[in-house]
Image 1 (cartoon, rainbow, N blue to C red):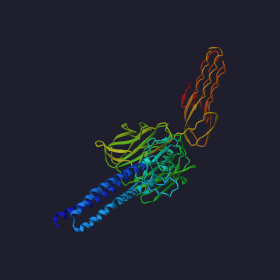
Image 2: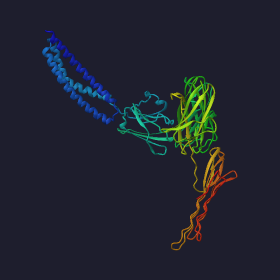
Image 3: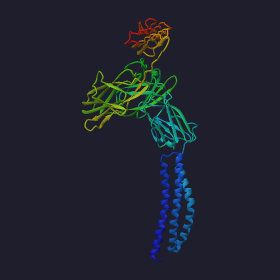
Length: 584
C-alpha cells in the first residue's frame, strides 16, 4: 500500500471527526447564548422552534459532505479501515434522530422557567443574589419577606426566570394613585427604584405574569427616618440618634413605641427602647410645631470596636408595626470629622438651619459641597460660615464653601433651607463631600445621607363651634377666615338695580403656644344671608380662637345694602393676629 492513500485517508477521517465535534459545540453554544437573551417566554419558544428548524436543515447539509468524504475514504482506505467506514455510514443514518433529541434536550435544559410564586425580597434578605431564591410549589401565594423600606431603598422582587416582557407591574401610592417608577430585571430579581419626590407611606404593588400568576402586596416607603450626628463615628463619642415616625399616609406619629438594636461588627448588641426612656419621646412632638428637638432621640456611647455597625429600628403603633435597617461606621481615625446639627422632621411652612461642624486631621484647602433637593430655597444662617455659592445641577442643588482647614481646629459651616410647602414628603441631604481645588477630586465624603420627614397636617373646621385639643406642647399655626357678608336683594321694578354684594371675611394668621391635652374654644364664622327683594344682606360672622384670655378673631364681612344705596358690604377686619388681612 502506498503512502499517499494512507495519508489522504487519515486526513479525511480527522476532518469527519472535526465536523462532528464542531457541529455539537455549535448546537450547545447557540442554545446557551439564546437562553441569555432577555426574551419573553412566547418569543423565546418561537425563536427556539425557528433555530431548531434551521439547525436541522444545516445538519442535513452537513451529512452530504460527510457521506461524500466517507465514499472517498472507502475508495482509498486499507482493508481494516473499510470495515470502520461501513459502520460509520450506518452511524450517519442514526445521527438525525440523535441530533434532534439532543437539540430538544439542550433547549429545554437551558430555557427560562417560570416559578409558581413571586416573592418580594428587601433589606438584609436582598443583600446578595444567593438569598433571592424562589421555591416553586412551596408557597400557596406570594408573600413579603420584609414590609418596610427606607426612603432610598430599592424594592427587590424575586421573579425566578421571568422575563420583563412576561410581567405587568403596577405600583400605587398611599393615595391610591398609580405611580410610574423605574423598573428593571437583573438576573432573577425585579427592581423598583424610588424617585426623589416619592411620597412616604404605604404603597400597593400588583404584578401579573403571562401565566396568570398574580402578586398583590403592600409595602411602606420612608415611614421611618433615622439619623446619627456623624456618619462615621470615633470611639468614645457620645452619638446622638434621632428618629421620626410616619403613618401609612405619611403623617407624623408622636405616640409610637420604638425599639432600636445596634449591632457591632463582632455581633454585640446594644438595645434602646421608649419603654425605659433610653429612647426619649419629645413632648413637643407634633406636625404643626417649630421645635429644635427631634420627635424621638437616644444617646449612644460609641465603643472602641472598629467597623460597620448595623441599626434595626422598629416602631409600633396602635394599628401597625414597621422595621427598617441602617448603618454607620466607627473608625479610629478619619481625615475629616463631620458632625451635623439638622432636623429629622420638619414643618415645611418654616425655614430650618443646618450646621456642619468640621475638624480636619491635617491642614487642608479645597471646596466642601452639600447636595439638597431642587425645591429647597437656600439662604444664609445667622451663625456659622455662610456658603460661597448655590447652583442647580439636574434635580438637585449644590451648595459649596471654599475653605482652609487647619489640623485639629473645628470650623462650623451652615445654611438655612425652606422646603416646599407640601406634605407629607421625605427628603435626603448630602452626603457632604470634600474636593480638591484644582483637580476637583473627592478627598472624602460622608458615609450616609441625612433623612428629613416633612409633615404639616392641619385640622380643619369649616362650620360650627367647639373645642380643639392640643396634641403636643409648643407652637401652633392658626389660620382664621371670617364669614362673608350676604348680598342685598335687588329692586323689584323692571330694570331695577341689583343689590350690593356682601363684604369679604377677614383672614387672621398667628403662631400661638398651646399645651398638650388642653382644650381651646373655637368658632367658625357663618356666611351672611342674602337679602330679600329691596332688602339688606346680613353680616357674616367672625371666626375666633381663644387662648388664655386672648381672642384671635377674623371678622365677618358686612351685608350688602338696599334699597336706596345699593352698595357692597364692608370688609371684615382681623384682630390680635400676627398677620391681619382685611376682607375684600
